Length: 615
Image 1 (spheres, helix red, strand yellow):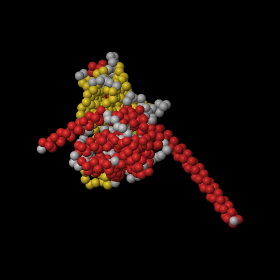
Image 2 (cartoon, rainbow, N blue to C red):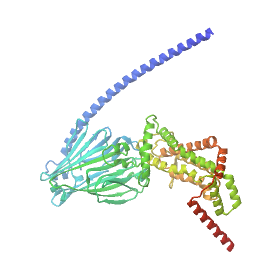
Image 3 (cartoon, rainbow, N blue to C red):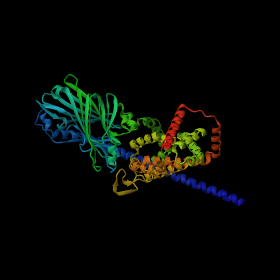
Image 4 (cartoon, rainbow, N blue to C red):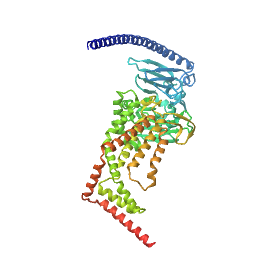
């Protein structure tokens, strides 16, 4: 006994020594890591200082270079009609914007926090793909698009708040001038763009400012065709939000005031905003038919604004080049821009509140505690199933009652044979006497419809899913691929998604289970439904985001587990049979609708009997 105590004491001492050594080493490593982190932060701060100094030097060089590309011997508009192109680049924590003195506008806009499917930065404007222009009277009866003028980079500076201010200027023959000012703020995807016109009567014909905005949206995602299907023209006309799909070539005109217009791709958009609103607008768009084309859609937008009387005018515009992020767009300060994110629109607008007030808050809450988006989706699914569980239980109870009545229904079927009319009447009578609702089992299917449409919209538009991996899926925002096919199947694609297979297989198991729980039906279509429905899902799901097919898989697994537990451990078959017997003993009152239905069925039965006698 003493030996055992001594060994125990020695063991605890050794454990204490080991724990002390572990804590000492861990503390030492932590101090070393902290020192290393401080050295890295110091190095990064020095690098950032060097970058800022280089950027300021580059800005000065750009201004000097821009001044040199103009013809110094020419005067007035002639000085801006010929020259060579010069560039100026501005970078913030979110954006990298490259300006050109030709047109005095952005020719490249990259989002520094987002990557394309090929790992390059997402480019909203790529190599001058987008362009704005307005006609300027540069001579008698001669108009020149502003995009063809070579502006002078008047200034490029950074204020005390870190805002980059870039000003381009062009001066005319008689002192008239154009200034185009851009303010790019850190932490924002919104660019303030102000056009100042001095001498409008000699520059703008009839004081009617006509702005042309051309947008050539380039592919950002893996599946170009699916990205086209999700692309839209969205605008606010006369205070009302509206949208148009861009899959087919079309043209739209708007005669009321337009506050803003957006060319929205699946996860990103380019938006033009006029704080004073345009008087009217017109849009033309063309969409390539080839799935391999990088161009998603080409749009030409024309806006008109009547300038106020006088020789000076200021047009306060803004550009948004950024993600379709609900929180960013909701807090940007522009009315209804959050509706660019499709959380439910058109005939499915009724699911938008489900996403806004249930799905998104719950998702954000769970995300605080779990890093993996796949796990967050699984927990979100469990939450949804929990709040719908009372209805699901009542549905399973209805199914159990139907199962208890199966012997009697089989007896009726054997008694009346091919007389479907009489069989239907007697079956409805049996249901009424037993107090069973034959449609009670449809509740989960009906309940899944708004939930599915809500999550379909949410997962299709949730930009945070881009690049998030889970299990075998490299990106939850698009389909996962376990096998690439050497050919393309219509409506299916050229790949096989494993999450689609898991969703389809679990749906098939649920259908089989439900068929076993339901009395035999005479309708042949109902017998083949367990096989037909999963095949439809296979074709429909294969191109959907793996986040959605993963949700559907988890939901189906929960359904199977609930069905098994409820049927085997919660629902008592003997009690149900006793309850049905008690229901039959109660007096039944018929509603007027039931009386009319029985009269119609009785009349139809008599007509059939008379036809048989006549034959």
